[in-house]
Image (tube, rainbow, N blue to C red; front, side, top):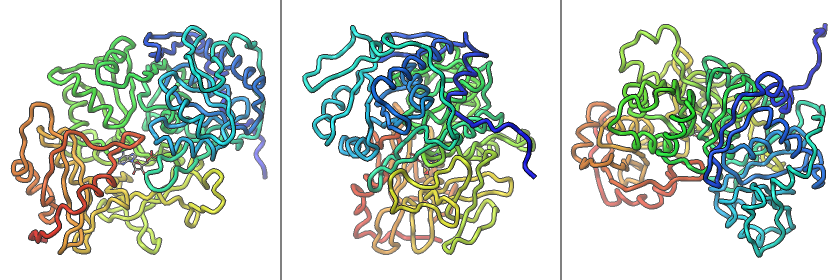
Length: 546
Ligand code: AMP
């Protein structure tokens, strides 16, 4: 028997019409690349998105066409989210930190019809034009006064398009499975691959992300997504803000500690989200102070492991709760969030931090398992490590325009991460499977070693890699950046690590660096470090005590 409920498709534009009707006067604040702070309201967002939807029709964009952006988090980028997806086309948010060759590759691969860009990225656009096989339309996201001089071909002006079009536009109804946006993986191995989100997956992901045990967002919040829209739709937070009617603060290109702190203070931000490298800059900026973010209640940290020392700084010094989260481009991106269960609230501090070092529990909608080499499910005992596989309505089932690639394995998506899951359902990533260290046939978790190194106050950040060893195949090598003013040396750090790990997990050497090489989404490029330090232990015969 079929239920007798209305069939109403889940569409991205419905988030905007809801926000306009119920939260019309809620603010959206953007730091513009022009340098000033721009303010308007959800009612303005809705009106201007409809104007832009009309402009796209004039420019010949049809349902299913790809429209790309090279842009920071700002109100015009937000308008494009609704104008493009809402009208049935596909918003392709390009990560400007990718190599130019990769950007050219994905523009061709996605067959983007138009590229909208922030002025910061004009040099990329100029370099790109020469490389593209077919001409594309380019739109500078600025007003006529800020239009750049460019010798390299025609350029349209965003505000001219807005001004020339009416704000009367009826968002079309369509199948909720229609594609709405496209994000490419960062392509650390091989070419980037396109993940094609649908209206349905986007709405379901927004419902899940807003839940109290996920990002916990409401109409009383002010949300600062530091994570860019070109990094998996800013983890869905702009959509969630529309769904719940939260104030949105968009930081533009200024992601340094000072600018973020200023924005948090002046806009009274209550929730923020970003990768650990961003928070390192913010914490360094306020170092020496306590309670530096009085309005901020919680910060979502993901994209790479959040160390215990980072969680402790936010919580102990600044009274800001940390929500450690895990996800990936192929998961829209939300998979797990580390929020406490009731029985964990009364645990002593060190045990609570041990829970928070985990990536957390799956949000409803995501199903996951850890599996062994033959695909057999492994126990959730908090110790056994296996390959993490996931499934759910916002998990990719295939890659865009890659008919030869079949990513699923028995209906599950293999994440490429190694993890353990405890009996409470808390998942902890131990490594990317390609980063795991294999010493004498046994596995060593690089992330566990990094977490312990980061507990030393003299360590600003730590990365552990497996490098070739003549006797043990691989041994861990620890690379560290020092906190400012620290004179920490190798012996002191190795003594500190001693006793906190199995003895044979202790790195054989430590190298101090000024900075780590970072990839397009702010993650440490371990493959680069392995290339550089791969022979570090050549000729050594370090003793190993198991
Ligand atoms: P991306 O698709 O660029 O977002 O990268 C996804 C990958 O980032 C995951 O498969 C993990 O390897 C890593 N990742 C994301 N969040 C975390 C986290 N909280 N801790 C450790 N690794 C993470």
